[in-house]
Each structure stands twice: as structure tokens, then as C-alpha cells.
Length: 410
Image (cartoon, rainbow, N blue to C red):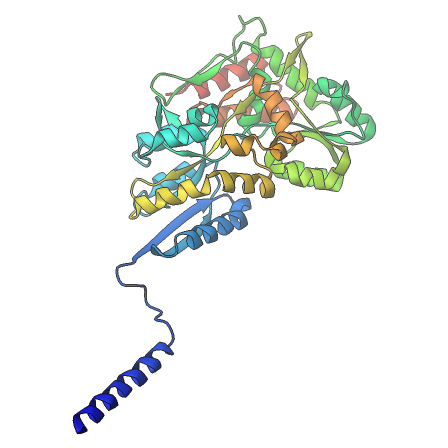
């Protein structure tokens, strides 16, 4: 009898201990065996809020599989390569960059080939896959297919006929007391004047140095005629050479009524101009007595995974998450950027976007940006002289020769 009472008492003690234990707060330490994953992510300054939203959703999706610690840092996509290659081992695990940097990043060992390239190829537009590849090998995850430029214009000032000619547009703007803006401090935009003339620039087979015939006097359209056309445009009071940031500021304060920019400004331009917002392919410009359709560089934004990441599998999974269909659709909704994902790009919202439609119209006159580092400085120096009206009075041929020599320098 006593033994029976003892066993009952012992059972009661265990019950009370169990009850007390069940009311204790849950442990704050990571679950046994759960991996701790710290990832640094680089993205554009204007993308920080969206990227944080995407990181939060990733963390929620995989919460049961690892303890995540994200460090989100702002880094320009246009010069991301320099930051990454500056210190590969301590650099970001995942980073956004412009597609013209993919070859250099891959050659430096910063990017490994994508582990499952076929799935990425099937999900994305062919042009975006090409932009993310080097010699047919996929090295990055396509994020957008809209890294190009086109014409924004205020319909209150310009007709459909006006926007066919840049020279006509600057005349209309001058009479209206407004400006047509374009950034001649960036060689990326200056390509617009040379790209459809038969004058050429591009990479040599070494993948590093350039060839450049923009100074040719033998071409059907000599380089000097392009230079003179730029001087004629710059001389108009209706033209303004200003950066992309200053273009948007002018749109917002009413001083700029048209300009060359990209989809990243679509939301802000529409907020400023409302129902008068117009977007179209680039116009033609008068050059040597003929109308030449303006060209453009095209490209994509990509997401890379650092080959030196301490957590390469999780970094790759995060890169896929950032670039998946849902998040590309969200990116278009929030930032107005054109998706590279086929399904997201085919949505009615994307197809109905004036900015995307203008980019598609301009794509006929564009090419992937594939130039070496020596391209930028000489072209920008030459264009600055044209924008200022050739203040030195130097021969146009001499300036073109100096530019071409600098672009093609070893």
C-alpha cells in the first residue's frame, strides 16, 4: 500500500514538473543543428526599400532551415565591379550589377558558372540570358531587361510629328521656354549619335581593348558631320546638357519638357506630368543634310553571387529569390523596371506600360553595351567640348582623332 502511494506521489511530481516546463518561454538560442547564415547584399540606393522587402520574404520562406543575418548596403550598379574586385574575399555575397561587367567579373574569378543554367534560361528572355553569359556560359541571374534609354516628352508641348526629330523638338522647346535634356557627360548616352551612322566602336578579341572608327573621314557619314550635328543641337536655347538626376529635377520643376532617360524614372515622370506623359523611341537628328535615327546601348541588370561567399548555396538561393517571377513583377510594380522573366514580362501591366513600349520600339536601333574601360573618358571629354560649343576652337577632326585614339588605347 505504501509502495502504491509512493508511485502515485512520484507521478504527481513528474506531472507538476512537466506542466511548469510547458509554461517556460521558448528558447531564444538557434535550434540544434540549424545553420547560422550571414549574407551581405549590395543593391542600388533607390532599390534599398524593395530589397529589404524581398529579404524579409526570403527570411520568412526559409525560417525553419537557417538563422539569417542580412547586411544590406547601397552600391551603384554601374561601377559595382570595381567594388567587388577591390576585395573579393570580404566583398558582398550577392550583388546587383550592369551586364557589361559580367565578362570582367567572370574572368577575375568573382563569378562561378550558374549551377542550374537551364532553369534560368527557360525562365528568362533570350536577350537577358545572352547578357548574363560569357561565351555561352551563364554566370549571373537576369534581373531586368530594360537597361536602355528612350524619349520622354510632355504631350502638352509636342505633337507626334514633333517627336520624330530632335532638332525640331529643341526648336519647339525654345519657343515654349522649356528644355529638351540629354546627358552628354555620360558616354553611354553619347553613343546615340554615332550608333546608326556606320561609324563603329566595340571590343577587340582580347575582350579588354577597343576599336573605334568614330573619327573616320571615309565613312558615308564622316565623324566630323556627327560632331557638327551635336554642336548645332547644343547651340539651341531649347537644349540642356544635364545628368539623369538633373533631368528628373527639371521634369519636376517644369523646366524640362522632354528628355532622354530610362524606365527607372517612369514612375517619377508620370507623377510630374500625369496624363500628359509621353514615351517613344528616340527621334532622328539632322546630320550632314540627312535624318539619322538615334541609336542606344541596351542591356540588363543582373544579380551575381560572389564565388568567395562563405555560404554559396544560400547566396545562390537568395539570388534566385530576388530574380524570381513574383519579385520581378513586384519590382515593376514598385520601380517600373522591365522584367527579364518571361511570365512577368508578358503580364498585361507590363505590356501596357508606355515606358516599356518605348523601350521595345527603341530596341530595333540598339545593341548590347560591350566596350572596354578606355571608352568612357575620351568620349565624355569630346562630348563636353561639343556641349559647350567647342570653346577651344580646335579642329573637329583633331578632337575626334584624339577621342578615337584614347578609346582604342592599349
